[in-house]
Length: 197
Image (cartoon, rainbow, N blue to C red; front, side, top):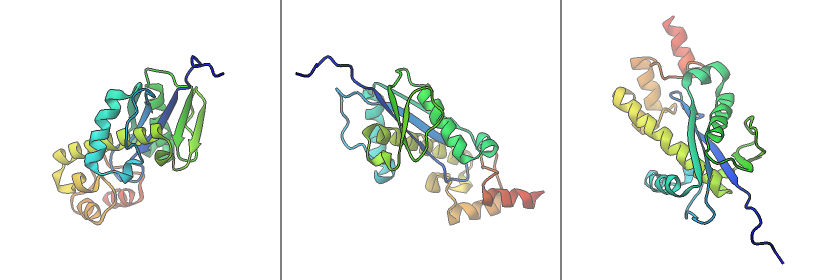
């Protein structure tokens, strides 16, 4: 006979968005889903349309037991490198949860330094709903930041390429130069800043 009153293990999923772009913060999210309020269609954010991500974002923040979005700035990325900045952003997201999880499931092959048990899962955003939820929050938040940056600097096209090193972004960089939000430790940006010295 099973004990139906057995305590439920609380899993938090965490993931980041924005490791590859040349500009802006790396954004992370942590989510503890409510087993009593399942959300249909959670998946790796990259496999979902922008419209679907926005709809799921609203569902996640409304129905999750706890969620938190955090980031590491471009300056922090330049200081400690993108890998450790990603770990820092995920650590901040997990620590910002209002409910303490029993286990944190991390997308990727390594875990941030946390004071709760954690397990890394390669491709976890497509395997674990809570990581998929975190990937959606992180991606939507970062995309919103890129739209805001586009309002300030429309010539760069951040609303289209989201800061990734596309041909259009590289052309804008060459023509208009580096802005404060660019990651100076990234090759294409570093090359331009060295030319300006």
